[in-house]
Length: 117
Image 1 (cartoon, rainbow, N blue to C red):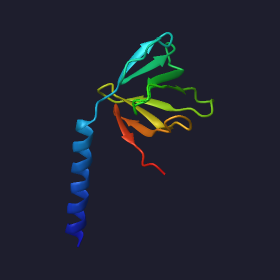
Image 2: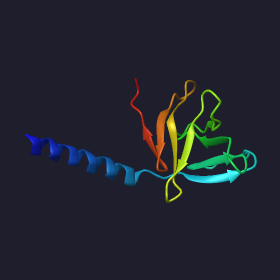
Image 3: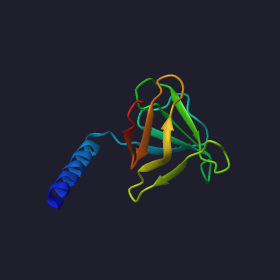
Image 4: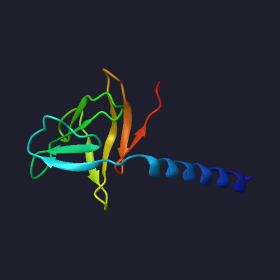
């Protein structure tokens, strides 16, 4: 029985890894101010030397700008981390309460969609 569960767990990991390899990645672009036109799959970090805000186009394709606070004392606020390859991760998840209502995680530069409720 233990081998059955191990095989099942390994297959799930392989499926997730394969899906992540096919997902386009996001890159960081530092900016003093938000550009007039944002590029897809870019996260704009505003503020120097430490970014205080981030912005990106909604990954669902609706073309809406999502702006999030990176200030610890703001509510809500997010934490941005870059891995060794410079790929961004945001926590917690981003959930648009209006418009398209997208809900996703950004992990290692990739969008992980949350199931609709």
